[in-house]
Image 1 (cartoon, rainbow, N blue to C red):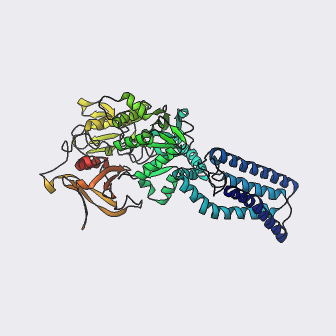
Image 2 (image 1 turned 180 degrees about the horizontal axis):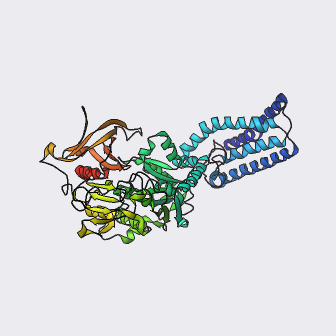
Image 3 (image 1 turned 60 degrees about the vertical axis):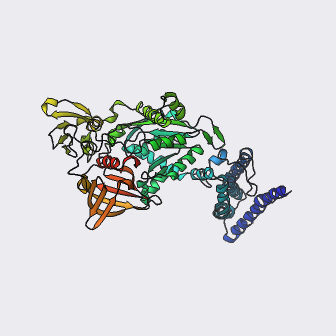
Length: 577
C-alpha cells in the first residue's frame, strides 16, 4: 500500500498539480503583460513540440523500467544505472521531455507566458534545487564512479555537448597546421571498453591519438601541463588526466580504471616519456603493471568480460620527424600517418610467447613494443635539423661516439655536427648522420638513435664509471657533473598541482654523495637515498621526485638526458625512471 500511495502521489504532483500551476501562472502573465496570442502556425509547431516531448518522456520511462528495473520516482529508485536509449543523450531525459511537453502545450494553447516565461523559470529552479541538490547526489551515492563518469559525458538537460563540439573543432583546426592521415581506423572497436597504446615521439601525440577514434578518450598526461589554469582547462576538455610521473599516482590509475569500467576508451603512451632519438624502448615496469590491471578480465557495467579488455596498438609514423624532443619547434610540412593495428588481448598474447621462467610482465612488455614497432614505417627514426627551428641534437647525442667526450658536440649551420674534442664531423642532412671527417672514416652512416647506442649515452647504457667525467679522488671532490640551472620546487607536489616555486639560477653539482644546488647563501642538497624518481620534462628540465615533493632543474645548455643517466645510476635500484 505504501508503494502504491507513493506512485499515486507522484502522478498527481507531476502530471496534474504541476501542469495546473504552470498553466495558471502563464495565463495570468499573459493578461498582466498583455501578451499577444501566437498564430495558428506557431500553435501547430507547439503541438508538434509537445508531442515529441511526451514521446521522449514516455520512451525514457519505458527504458528505465525495462533496463533499470525501477520507476522514475526518487523514493523508489531503480537498482540498475541506465546509460542507453534516451539516457545516452541527456542525464535526465524524463525531465527534458517534460519541459518540451509543457512549453509546446503552452504554445498550442495560445500562451506565450507559459511557453516563454513560466516553463523556463520553473525548469531552471527545478534543476538548480531539486536535481542538483537532491537527485544527483543520490545517484552518485547509489552508483558511485559509474554515475560520475556518465555525468561527465552527458549534458544535464538539453542534448548539447559543447565540450565535444570544441574537441571536434580543435581537431579540425589542428589539421590545418599539420598533415594527418589515419590507416586502420576500422580496427578500433566502436563499442565497449578499449585500451589504445602507442609510442611517444612528440608533443602532438596527445592530439594525434584523438584521430584514432571518434569516441571520447581519456589519456594520462604529465601533471606539469595542469599547473596553469588555461592549460589545465584545455587538457581536461580534451580528455587529459593529470599523472604525477615523479611519484606513485593511484588517483590517475583509478580514473583510467573507472573509464574502462564504464565502457570507455583509454589511451596510453607506454614509453612514459617522449623518446629523445625516435627509437622505442621497452615500456617501464610500472606502465606494464598498469596495462595488465586495466586490461584484466572483469566487468564493464553489467556486462561480464571473460577475456578482459581489448588493447589496440598505434604508431605515429612521422611524429618524430615532425617535432623531435631536441628541437624547439615543428616542421609543419611533415606528414604524420597514424597506423592502427588489430585489437588483441594482452594477457593471452603474452602467455602465448612467454618463455620458460620469464615473468609475465616482461612478456607483456615485449608484446606491447613489438606490436607498435611492426606498425612503424622505415623512416620513423629520421629527423632533419635543417628543417627544424632551434635544433639541438647534441641534447640527445651528448657523448661523442669517437672520443667519448661529453657535451663536446655542437650543430653548425643546421647541418654539420662536430666534436670539439676529436674533430670528428658528421653531415646531418636528411636525418642520417654521415661521417665526413676524418677522411679514413668518411661515409660511415647511421641514424641518431644508432650513434646514441654506439656512444652509450642513453639512460642505462653503460655504468657510471665508464666514460664518466669524474675528477679527482673520492668524497666531496669527486665531481661527476656541474652545470648552471634554475631550481624549482614544490615540497607538497603529491597533494597539489601548484606552479613550482623558483629559487633562481645557481650551480648544480652531482657528486658521489648526492646532488647539490647553490646560489649565494641558498643551498639545496639531495642525498641518493632521497631521490625516488628521475624523469625529464620538455627538452631542458630534469625532474626529481624527492620525498613528498618534486624538484626541477631547468638547464640553459646542459643535456637533461645526460643528467638523468648519472642521477638515476647514483640513486641506484630505488629510483624509478
